[in-house]
Length: 218
Ligand SMILES: Nc1nc2c(ncn2[C@@H]2O[C@H](COP(=O)(O)OP(=O)(O)OP(=O)(O)O)[C@@H](O)[C@H]2O)c(=O)[nH]1
Ligand SMILES: [Mg+2]
Image (tube, rainbow, N blue to C red; front, side):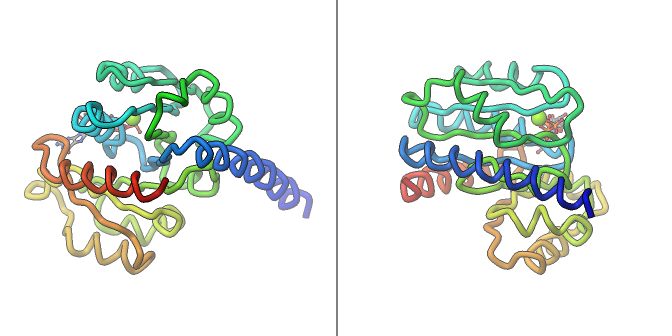
């Protein structure tokens, strides 16, 4: 069917650019993470905490992806790191070509680690390779423990799961063990972090892992 053919061509074109991005990142020794989640799980909050913790030991750059506004870029820029905002004007995910263009605005010689915050959406970004070393899926406790089962592609394609907003566990209908079990059923290889951007719990463990993983990835 023609619809399927067009979809395949779009993805093939995306994958070719993603491969070009990946090669460039590897040549320049830049560790790249693609942060994906539904809207409001805490991607930008995690980046704020991460910048605060790591900015003295690593050169951090960020590419922000949003349907509208540069609000997230403003939040992250307050930590003194390089930031570029992509506004997709309605697009529900980032594509490799958008990242390739955004990179032109970054000084890659001053970048050890690049975070790409994808558009808030637990479905579409999973199918689009951007050239990252790994995908990090963020799920917050307010979203419920069944989400890995309902949106499996995102958890299958990710290497890391950050469970955020653990400070809210006493107040929401979410069982941490159930959430983790469901995620690991979909992808047993997931590295899991439990954090709260509100209290700071789990942030040092996440940042230590980033430093080690970044060093070994290069
Ligand atoms: N209680 C609590 N609130 C949090 C935590 N992390 C983030 N929030 C709040 O959750 C809301 C959404 O956080 P953001 O960091 O903007 O989420 P996001 O994933 O970047 O959202 P989009 O970019 O719109 O997809 C904000 O009001 C944050 O202050 C947390 O660990 N605990
Ligand atoms: Mg955000």
